[in-house]
Amino acid sequence: PPGLGSSGRLSVMFAADDDGAGEVVTSLITDLGHRAVPVGGLDRARYLEAAAALVISLLSHGEPPGSVLNWTHVSQLAAPGSGKEVSS
Picture 1 (spheres, helix red, strand yellow):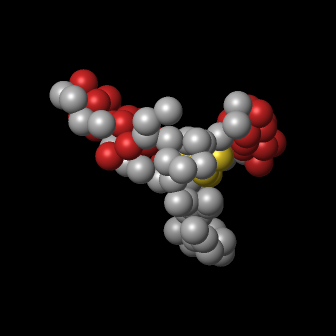
Picture 2 (cartoon, helix red, strand yellow):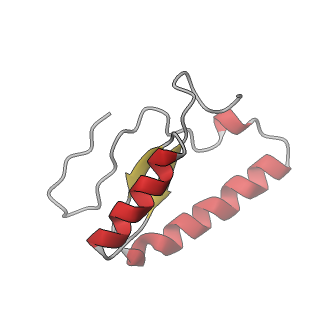
């Protein structure tokens, strides 16, 4: 489908404070065939909500899905100070 990149998978960002909850969310996303991208704790959820509002606005004004926040090359996005490196 358009907007999914060459892999056909979406990169789905999520925030979680609890490791167990993050594992459940990761499983749900990967079970649907997509890539889970943890962005840190729930303090970062407000940024995801703002990004979602921007994406919805752009899509509703006719922007092609593949041009809106295309994360098809991101395999992991770590929160600042987490000690994890971002890889692509």
